[in-house]
Length: 487
Image 1 (cartoon, one colour):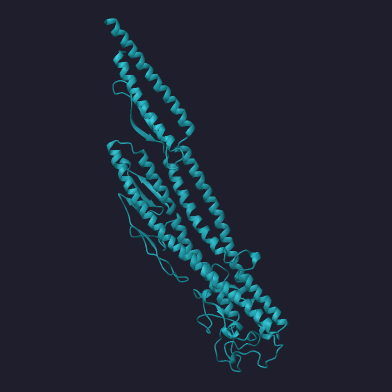
Image 2 (cartoon, rainbow, N blue to C red):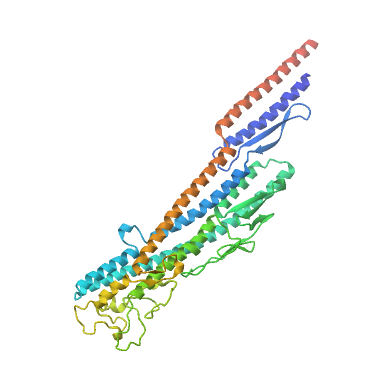
């Protein structure tokens, strides 16, 4: 090998090693970046003599990456559901605190029992009204909480849709950079990392799958197959509902004009925060609201008064409990009834009423009076009310609770339903979170930067650099000796 050839070889080695050191330095600088992948300077021989770095690659594992996207979407959906159920759980509170409608109805029954033993005492009658007011207030409060949860979910859906559109716009910019860079042979590894980071954020909002194409191009679809990005982002639209009435459906989300959430459709998304929020707004909260409404209807029915005339002609009317549509008795399920149930003013001392009408009847008028003799020890009506709380009624079957039960049992079943759903959702959320964490760890181990490995590579490259430098020094010394001998 000639001295000139040796010099060229050593010089190419120095240049290639310098580029390799630069790549390793980039890796070390981003060692704590969860979105960074390990970059590798590809070393090739020739053409001619020496070595060169024609391109820089990155470690990637598409299968693991797709697994992460799927696991992350599923985890985010379940997290949204669990968070909402935690808010709904506040309506029943700790069972030991006895603040749930079921516990308060039981207290009302116990107060009626006490009143039955002392019917001539107006103070005990007032305590029945107080207990009944606690029940109606609990139903009002629970209904307000459900409405708040639905409104918050609707607002969060709007935020999620805005995030999706913003992320798709970012993805378009990065995808175009990848295509141009790949076509021109430029290093696009950092851009690919940034594009993957956008996909990770997008999977938080909605379940996605990707399809890779020539020159690094990529298309994005929802987990149900609707196009989100193909050469250009597709519009994702949603119209927020300012005032969600009880039981009323909220707006749907559309992608490229196709409904993907908020309405029954074959292409409805299955995962991501958006799917979880939709489940909360249109399914879980609506069902629980229906249960509260049916509790309110059951109470109104249990305490309703009937015409006590010798020849009854008047329809049943509201008694201790009434609502905005009283004195008519609601014949069937009525959306939002729990928000309007209240104590009849004619029996509430705080509103100038007479609490002893609970014993005597006539809350809705003289024709409904049970104690016609005005006997202070009259207990028939009180006993009838106690029995009514434990007598079977027919409830709406769509509430996912037994359609036939007493109002007390129905309220207890509602508490059990909510708690069982919350526990199930929490367990599922923990499982999905564990799967997502493992997917993150596996992806990081396969494609991330390991500081120890990079420092070892840096030491090896330093030795290579020193060896090439020594070769150049040796050639220089040989040339100097040759020139001196010739002169």
